[in-house]
Length: 210
Image (cartoon, rainbow, N blue to C red; front, top):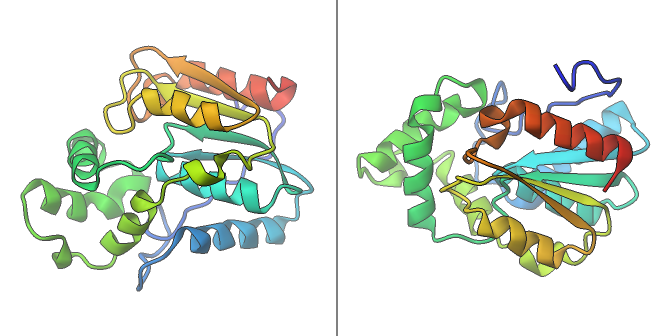
């Protein structure tokens, strides 16, 4: 309701493999996702945007903000997977966390893959999504974070076990203009666990900056 009542134009992009988008036939790189974001924005032709990304979407948002500084005027990262994690521990955490959330549209295409990881079945039984996710998860954003010139809001769930809260502060230390908002009791999906607080923080940042 907080965002609905504000006069903002929101574009929700279903990246390949998520939501209503089809699963990619071949492994995609981070730059491929950035190209998709750019193509969507080219179609709608906004002069400037605030780009927001959650989890691995935060990596896409980060790289796009660096590559398109004239188009992106603000950046919002929500529990962003911007700092490289040990792959196996990340998969285990994701699998445990997402098991009860598979009914959400943007997670349904990951269900089979994560369940197979939980059950110890080799990832090659689902070759379409894993290479892409592996590419994204493996890329560490720290080398380019200091190139982010836009004001950046970092929203994080204090109880996140997938991307621990320490990563929020690691990210903020590398970005020249960064503000961390920590949401007590919220996990990796902090915008679901604390929707009002997350939305209020984001709208205040969009309207008034830091």
